Length: 341
Ligand SMILES: Cc1cc2nc3c(=O)[nH]c(=O)nc-3n(C[C@H](O)[C@H](O)[C@H](O)COP(=O)(O)O)c2cc1C
Image (cartoon, rainbow, N blue to C red; front, side, top):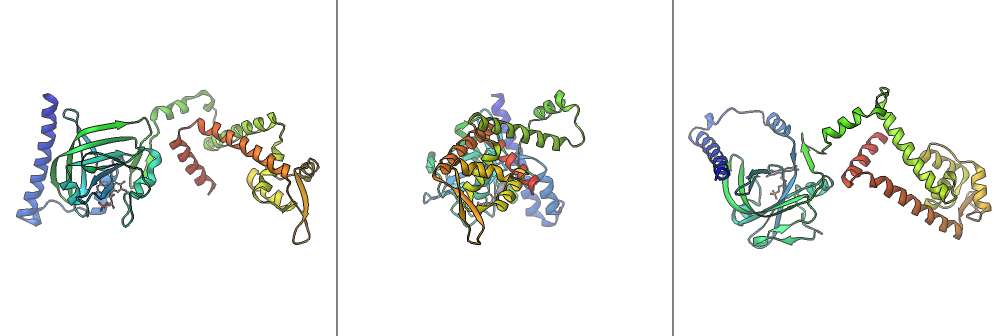
């Protein structure tokens, strides 16, 4: 009972808010309230970090409708209710006003592209997605972090938006990391606790001011070491791996090109002796390059060796990725690419 009255009081506050704005604009537009610089107001709103959702419904002709929205908020536990708001300019206003149901999908950190897709105009936002169906034909997206299927309970005028309040008829969620939106940019969460634990760890007490450099180099050396150990356990040297993977990618290179590519990828060159050993073992063979120089290419045995090395690399990649969850892998790749720029 107490919870119900809390929900009612929230709804009343919404009604009061709607009435105030309507009265001001309707009676005398010049007294419609202070006029703010809309860019500044937008920026101030954007300082509130939110999650990102996709809200869907079905049009009268059964067409699938959906858009990205961060105006979502939970409202009430009993009865279970949520709200979100839709810009009056939306061509889909009628569909949301008239269909008795909608679904809110909360996106996880690895669903930024889905968010961008559902905020873009002039494309089929549902193309290629495997959909389930909710009540009134509402399209339900797979693989989201949480989903609330709602019966439309109330609609309120909210300035240039319409506020939709829904009563939840079904929901589900999974333990993933959320996609975050703040200051007009996507982000993801890093628990303060985790940061504090790293900062207080003993091995970090002696860091120099280059601590980021230290951590990146350390992570590189450790991951590289684990690859080298895997290679050595199968009687491969790191240099042999380097040459075979360079030739595996680009057959028919001459020695100076192999050295240049190795310097680029590993930060160090390759001795001619290693290439010679691989020729002696029958994994590489010499051929004439078109400019008259001597190039090397893989033999059939060499190609088998490359396949084995690819399997080792994949298993090392799986070991590294196994230490992180998929959204962290994506974030780390993004950050390392920025450092490499
Ligand atoms: C992160 C993010 C949050 C958004 N939140 C909302 C929102 O809460 N309400 C809204 O009407 N539009 C919101 N938009 C904009 C719409 O997704 C976008 O304008 C979309 O094209 C609207 O589609 P429609 O015109 O087909 O309804 C948001 C966009 C992004 C990228």
